[in-house]
Length: 477
Ligand code: NAI
Ligand code: MG
Image (cartoon, rainbow, N blue to C red; front, side):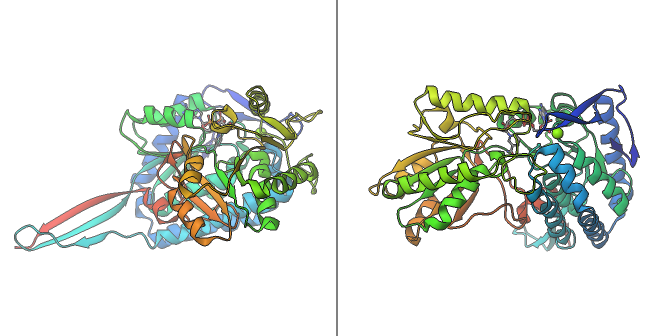
């Protein structure tokens, strides 16, 4: 752990181990933080916030963040390999998705350091006033990151916090701490003052819960499950700390009869199979027009059979393992529940034999809105497909899209521009793509409606979420 610029073991001496999900073999023992360690890290972050960091000018904050981006880039091969081994990401993706994602985030966020601003306002009260609104850093931020994109998500959380002038205690997921340990080492090398970036490694129920309940943490930024999101809201009541939550999804993909199927089919397949479906915005529900349903489902099933599932260090591998034995059990449990509730397995559906936590890319057809596989986040490579008819209008399709408690993301494939925009307006969803696919862009606000979270990360809204406003009025008379 890194506390106030110093590397330490846990005060209790306890450790936990992290494994390679492709083999199930142990990679390393890592310090397991308890309350004492969390207290020390928060105290270090507080001292830096009130001390040296508060004196650092915006352009210097930008320079340091950019320097960290350069160091990540320069150490990109090592970080990509670390991420592949610890997370189970196929090596062909980890250089650009993880390392590239982290570098892009930090370079984008660095720009905000010199551009955040307050405003001046005219008051209606009698007399002459000078009234202005200061935008100040919110303070000490706890940042709790999940295991699916540890490096890129840690960077996406660190960047805006540091740009805004906050200090940070990072907590990576217990399944995937290794790239974050290297990240904070690089932050030290970049020259951030001691205590600006702190790291506690440990379990959610101990280290995570202690951060979320801590009386001296001003904000907690969390990405992960809806269940843990609720626990964080509860814990934040201690001191009314600010909370931002990026939670799960059950995102729909709509493919209309007039869509460009050469693009829509591979995009829908990769939308659910990329990273073995362990993506918050995964397109896990497919609504396809009946005129093209057979062709689309055959196309997706064909890709499911063709995509190489295998060891993550094999450069040809497209689909790696799930992150843990527990996730494998969850995902195969959902596939089984789908079967029992009457869904049909069009392709896949089985665990892959051998070492590691692999499950076949799977398509379930004949799914109904009441089935658990249609309502709950599976977080595996499992697509639930449903046909719609050409008589269905934007209202009815939006009702299908909005049928779950989530509202994170959606994709629409059609050449009918009016229908695309009508449907986009009616979907209760934080991100919508029309006739295209792609990952996170740091310029776009990212977050969800409904149970998909609170607030937005990225973009202007994301960095402003690390600030407080202070209204100051001077009577000039
Ligand atoms: P989780 O939400 O429990 O874990 C995410 C992070 O929260 C980890 O760093 C963990 O240590 C921490 N955490 C756990 N309990 C905590 C607590 N009480 N207080 C503070 N921090 C706590 O997710 P988990 O159990 O690893 O995965 C379960 C399911 O969650 C997945 O199957 C998936 O559906 C969903 N999930 C969604 C993610 C997303 O990107 N939206 C990412 C990871 C999981
Ligand atoms: Mg691991």
